[in-house]
Image (cartoon, rainbow, N blue to C red):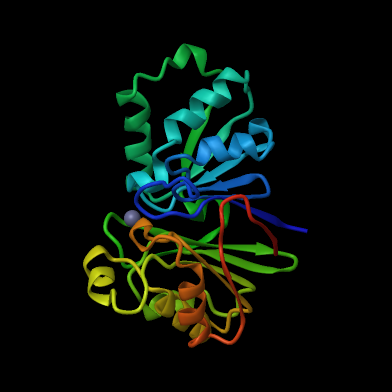
Amino acid sequence: MPKLTFLGTSGSVLTKERMCAGILFDDKLLDVGFGVLANLIRSGKKLDSISDLYISHTHSDHIGDFTGLVWAMAMKGRTKPLRVVSSSSAGAALERILDLQSTPYAWVKFEITFVRPEDVGVKSVTTVHDPENLAYRFQTDRGDLVYIGDTAKSEKISEFAKGCDLLIHDSTYLDGQESLAALTQHSTARDAANTAKLAKSRRLVLTHFSPGNGVAERRYLAQASAAFDGRIVAAKDHQILTV
Ligand SMILES: [Zn+2]
């Protein structure tokens, strides 16, 4: 059964309870924001079993631990290649970041390949966010998983997510924070729920919560439930879900 482990569910900055964006999906890691490496190691997952890293975009709350992950893999003596899937601009930025952070390549005994989602047969779409953010759609034999990354509310996303089993959606803000959401190109819980409703998704996972909203899980859930009838989860760090 395809398994998801949430390694970070905070937006922008980490908190005591929540690291920045990161989800383990079988042998794939989806984003690697600040603190995700620590939670990945705590999860007991062997770093060597991770084959692919999918990056939504280059905001540091989604890539902050990238170099740390590569170094941790090198320290474990990794030899198998690591495939990094992203937009071409994000791939180029990540390569540059490894250089800028003075990665000692002689010590990295594995190849890091930077590819586009179309190279590996995974569907993607650009969301409403700057820098360019790719949402990904993964097929499993139990239904499709859609990971949005960051986005302002957008009907295009519901088309992309049509009929998926599990929609993991940016849910940074609450009702009353719509102007903030528009300014920062993020979604409210209600936006996420409207997208799930239009997409006829079976389940919705809310994540990327604004630290400024403190512990407001019940409010996020209540506002999303007003717009979407399916099952809704407000993700917590270390939470496990199956597809
Ligand atoms: Zn972002």
